[in-house]
Amino acid sequence: MDRPVTHAPDRPALAYALLVFTTLLWAGNVVAGKWAVGEVSPQALTALRWAVACLVLAWPARRALAQDRDGLARHWLYVLLMGAGGYTAFASLFYLAGTMTSAVNVALFQGSVPVLVIVLNYAVRRVPVSGLQMIGVLVTLSGAGVAATHGDWRSLVRLGVNRGDGLMLVACLVYAGYTVALPARPKVSALSFFAAMALAAFVTSLPPLAAEWATGHLIWPGPRGWAIVAFVALGPSLAAQFSFMRGVELIGPNRAGLFVNLVPIFGAGLAVGVAGETFGASETGALALVLGGIVLAERFRPRGA
Image 1 (spheres, rainbow, N blue to C red):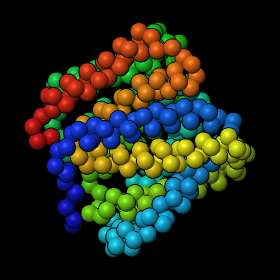
Image 2 (tube, rainbow, N blue to C red; image 1 turned 60 degrees about the horizontal axis):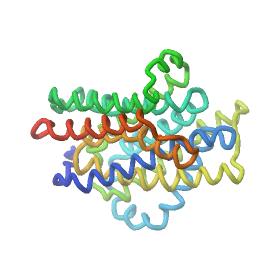
Image 3 (cartoon, rainbow, N blue to C red; image 1 turned 90 degrees about the vertical axis):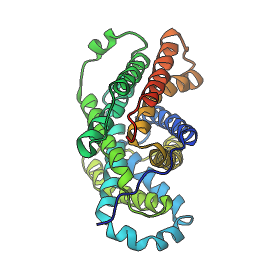
């Protein structure tokens, strides 16, 4: 049995830059998911984003895939499950949830990923978690909550929990599992590994697409819809996933998962630039809490974690 891939030497500065870039693109994905409503249906968007990603990767990844063919073949089930879970299932649930619940709830539930990562990582690998690190996680979550509710916690009571909220929670659990499983990837190049997972994501996105068509819910994209597809394929699907994989490789899933809390912060920033919304006291406080929590969790992480 092959040994899991170990983390690269700790290079936090590079990892931080990659993970901040990743969360910026994911924040853009939140906006794109809301814009997609009525322009392209959730399963069509999921299938098309990975179809475009596969086409873009076909030429640059051809040599890496040929070189790593045997290693990928030995771990075909792992690659299939990672692509089906972290890419297809998460995206399908994410876009479907966006049609049923508010952007506030989507952002808030996405902020639960770091907690789920730490819990799963402890349950699966017994990765130690210090008390102060957990406090840092809670601080970042509180910042995400402030950003998602604009400082009005009563909105949580008014919004309640609907079907979309449940789908988003399942999506976050799926992505947390993907994050925890990522360090155990086969000893192949990142390019060939990602290309194989992208292909797995496209193949596994076809049955949900067929179901969407059969039930009469399929919306094929027009010009605006294709622009959304292009963005989510080249940004959140390609650039962000490469950056996230490298960030996890450099500092591990527990620490990398904390940066997901920046998504609602960047989402607010994009709302200012795109929708002309104001950046007030609640957004400023949320930014301070998220960044402060990340610093706290980084500073007091257990040795050897």
